[in-house]
Amino acid sequence: MGSRSDSSTEPDSGVCPVRFLIDGYNLAHQLTLPAGTVSAERLARARDELLAHLADRHGDSAGTVTIVFDCRRTRGMPEREIVRGMDVRHALGESADDVIERLIAAHATPKKLSVVSDDRRIQVAARKRQSRVLGCQQYLDELDRPAPPAPAPAEEKGPAIDPAGDAALLREFTAPGPRRPGRKT
View 1 (tube, one colour):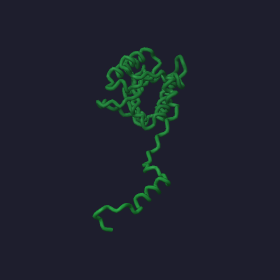
View 2 (cartoon, helix red, strand yellow; view 1 turned 45 degrees about the vertical axis):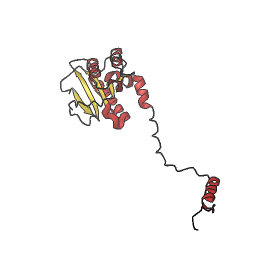
View 3 (tube, one colour; view 1 turned 90 degrees about the horizontal axis):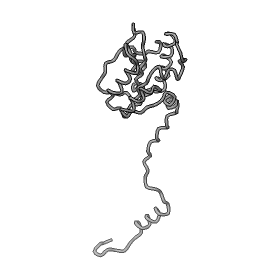
View 4 (cartoon, rainbow, N blue to C red; view 1 turned 30 degrees about the vertical axis):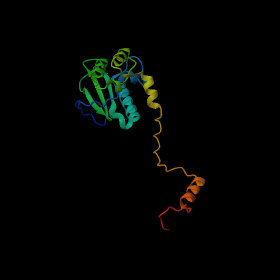
């Protein structure tokens, strides 16, 4: 695949930064993959297009994305690889749905997980763990929405200026007042 920037495998680290768990071919069909039977080359191109799209849209937060693809041919295909910062998994010897369900069940903070799939089985598994469920088109719409502008830095504000009030205070504290007994001036 041409878009891989790092094809090394990475062991599970105990800390789970995953915020998006994506049913790869389910989402690819929504973007560029035609329905029906397609060649292995077309599948590879669809994977590359999807991964490039997701990496571009997620930018610096690509490390929070895990994508799972079904994989019929296992020769030479790694079970797990990092592609442009994203965790890409290939379901070797099982379905992507099985892998996704297992990842949902094992997630340390499932309420912070967004699961992307139009597959009812996956959506049910995600809802059982109280994960956020996004259909493929809903997820793509969210990705295409511009990010809200960052809040402007707070300005330090002094007291409001009131020229008339400030002048009155200045007169009050600088005008000679009554003398206090026992003080010499």
